[in-house]
Image (cartoon, rainbow, N blue to C red; front, side, top):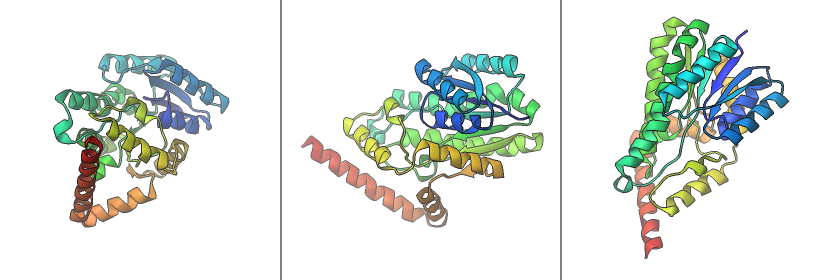
Length: 271
């Protein structure tokens, strides 16, 4: 029975809710995070709903830690059926405000962490004819202003997922990529940006969302079951993506207008 799942960033937020959703069906979980207390709590929640598993500290920037996690899955579960590359961090700032270090940090975690997760677990997924679920963002598709490094990292996750979709389909491995809009989560804990105003603006977006991580986990579960490649959990996200595919210039103009408003607000706060 296909019931072995590995999740990075499982210590909170969407990673935790995905673990709990699949655990309700008795899945065995390999829960990875750099937050030891958070991931231990996730395991307790998993066990409370009928799942089981183990936790392992893992920084997705370090390929050796991912290969060690893969080895533990092989030893304890005899392989893996589904991997969820969920670990990620938030950042923001206009392009001219972002340092190259900001870029390196963002790409190392949000893009290369996913690349390394796929690479470390691919042999086991080929053996089990399993599934890859990569967590990207609507930022990958809409490219909002003042978050270019985040946009690029998440767009890379979509491009990677599409590349793997076509390469692995003939080998029996399914690939899914999830692009949520803003939702209630603790993503702000990891936020890195040049101004406190930017962090406050992102915080407002997160708090104002009517959708929480549990809803998104349910939606992912439903759409993976029917085989969707690109999973867009938010209705407004699905609508915006449909518009952009038909009229990209309309979306570009909206984003440009938003950028001007953000710059004007920043000037006011400095005045």
